[in-house]
Amino acid sequence: MPPIALTLGPVFFHWPAERLKDFYFRIADEAPVDRVHLGEVVCGKRMPFSDPVWPDLIERLERAGKEVVLSTLATPMTARERRSIEDLCGDSRLVEINDVTALPSRTGKPFVSGPFVNVYNGATAQFLIRRGAQTICPPVELSLAHIAAIARTCPDTEFEIFAFGRLPLALSGRCYHARLHGLHKDSCQFTCEQDPDGLVVDTLDDQSFLAMNGVQTMSAQVQAVMLPPAEFAAQSVRRLRLSPHTCDMVQVARIYRSLLEGNEEPERARVLLSNLDLPGALVDGYARGRAGAEPVASP
Image 1: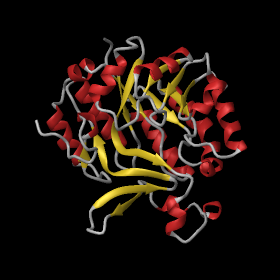
Image 2: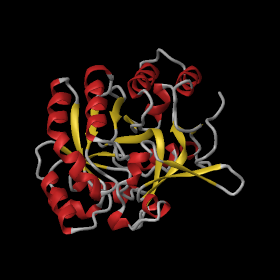
Image 3: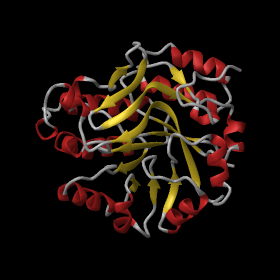
């Protein structure tokens, strides 16, 4: 099998334009990733802030040798948002589909099936492949064994796992950030920008439970799936996805690259990762078929 590739997924959070520019310029120059996703996935109301930035970032990333993938909204709500998906699906670059309503606009052209598309069995994977799916990133709650079983039914397709970051768990028609600040969704004042890694929600016992990001529910903890490259390959994993946060993502990418090249053992890589300014504790329960919030497995 070819070497396992590294992907930087789309930013889930509402970062201002200057932060996006600084972040992706550094990714272009320093991060050892093969593919970079750009685009608003969570909330269409944020798009007027980020859309003007994407052309310059695409040019900078492609000039640096990165493959750019255009990510689409996971829950299009308005006619304008549906049109934006249609426009993206007409691009010659690879597109990530996060909602099946985008399929008619992309069928026959290559695309990435994102983690918001419910791919739980081989029949669904093959349905998407017949319509052009080249890479499938299954939902985050699936175990590696389950993903491997799906991958065996379509061995020529690339399967990618969500290897790092707060887990995207659900999307709602309501905006949690707006409600927290006593606002309506339509007049949210973009309060989610105040929490660039999401806002942790605690239980009544003061335990970190979830994180909210506008209309999105995420894990409070940070997924960190780390195995020797041969074990990833044995599970039919051909690509790892790193989800952007405000921590040093260049260093995160370097740690994972070192792991995939066999220069770092998983336990040592976890230690290096935990020394970064992460927004939560490291977990990998879902990958092992356990509760998602379980701490990373000991060697």
